[in-house]
Figure 1 (cartoon, rainbow over the protein chains, first blue to last red):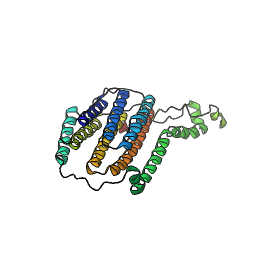
Figure 2: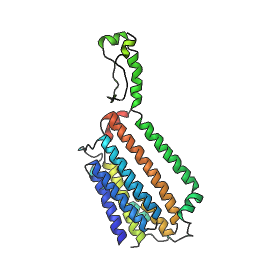
Figure 3: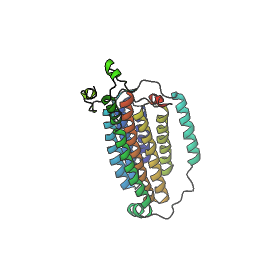
Figure 4: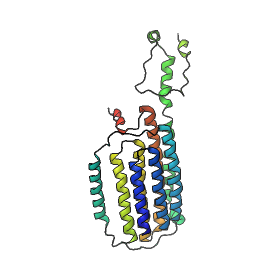
Length: 198
Length: 101
């Protein structure tokens, strides 16, 4: 019965996270889903995973969401959803019915030979998984660094354009702008660079 | 209903809500939220299956792998959303249609 309350609470938190107008509310409801999921995992005997889920899922990821929202802005979208809500609910009900039909009732699940404790399984049997996790973390760090440093690339591209000003463009004083308006506050384009070739 | 069946019904509900969010939302950050919700449901299902079959250690090791992958996906997705906001000025998924050739 306790599991029913916990899972129902997690589902309600998930629904509130999806339906929340403000992004910050959505992130906090997601933290609630993570916290309830961590309690469920702890009750199921997966103590280490529960701690990892609580610290990473409800802690680190929420902080990252708040950080990203503070940068990107918490602009609420009043635009219509991508597909009609009734169609989405219909598809959702079909999905739930199909999944329930495939999985339930759960007979035939029997306990097999018990595996070892987490540390033995993780470091001996699933050593390749640990290696994959390390590669994943490296990939994630490199991906984030590459993405967040991408803003400097268009600025660097524009530096030669500013240093090689042609006479005809110098007359009208207008250099072609890129299609996207970028914040070039970080670009160090010296105003006297155009005078070098003059 | 047994504990496992209760958990499976709840997991179906959580994964369904995540899919519903992916279907209706146009905000890039909320797309990442919906993906996180989907993975939370899968995580509970994984550990519940491990508990029912006696393979708690194996299910925990797989769950940790899933948590790491999920976190990396979330971080990269948020970085993409921030860059999209910087370059296009909006978080609307439809704004990405300007990428069409």
